[in-house]
Image (tube, rainbow, N blue to C red):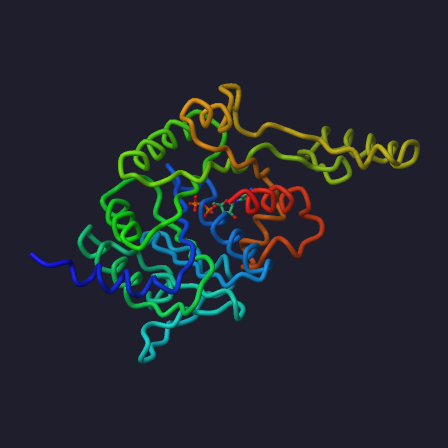
Length: 296
Ligand code: ADP
């Protein structure tokens, strides 16, 4: 039996792509797509040529997070053309192919594998420094085929996104062991929603008596010690008493890339489909992300 012709086409297609990074998570809702989107924005802002491929077929949130809702894919004689945010940031997602964004995609394994294969084989990216692949959560059949296809073309490795609590980390351990089994390098783990930091001046309390008291305290601070309002309150939103992502990484012998705090401005940037790097107030998070990008 000769080589799989699809695999041959994928390898051929990927010869113009220098680096491929797969973004994985054990669970949904931990911020994997947000990270993939912001990582792509960050790399593009560093003047790299970037492609973002969304193969989270059941929940394609990438078009919205990049501000590309309602866009359509066009075809040329070179293949499917990605939708461009900027000249150096192209995006491809199943979301562009759904006639109605509210439609559920109920596909069985083979059909999902088919579209993933097609994405890898038929999208004309041109010359890319980085292809970021946003995978579905978990470790299913789809993951095995994605990894096999990408390995044939030489993939750099995977970044795993998690939140700090045990319930999430248990799944990350599975994700790491999946990578080890299939021979995929773990570039590192990002701990997202890792605590919440808010300047005191921005704290808002509940309704009723508490609110009255807080407003009084803030008003008196504003008057007497205004600099106190610049203090930042930090709160561990999720329980990380088990040591969080950093300890898990030490246990499993994989790099810990860093922490990204919960930041309402990041959520807003994702909702509005833009980079959080141009939001000067989102500095804490942008710094954390930048440090992570540099480590990758
Ligand atoms: P996943 O891809 O893992 O399912 P998403 O990236 O879709 O998760 O994130 C889920 C939600 O959480 C989104 O609304 C996103 O904007 C928000 N979010 C993710 N990370 C953060 C963060 N660090 N701070 C604030 N909101 C976040």
